[in-house]
Length: 89
Image (cartoon, rainbow, N blue to C red):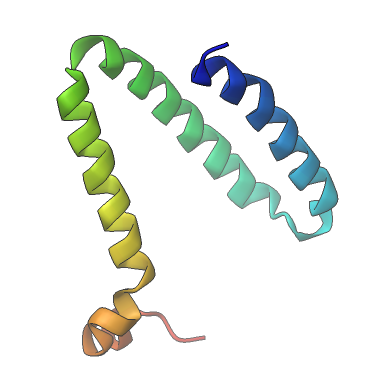
């Protein structure tokens, strides 16, 4: 069985269990945005896999992973800028 088939079998069920377990904490509006964005990303990714080479896709994945990590630690990397752009309650 390929990795894609295993992910296809596991991810929906684990996501469903997580959603049911935390259903009181889920904001429906935010969830709808995530579902729509994820669906668009799924379709775009599926189309791009047939067009773009594996090397380019790997580089794009690496760049998006690095951007995610930098965003997660932005408050430590650039605290002054973070304070200016972070909305206060």
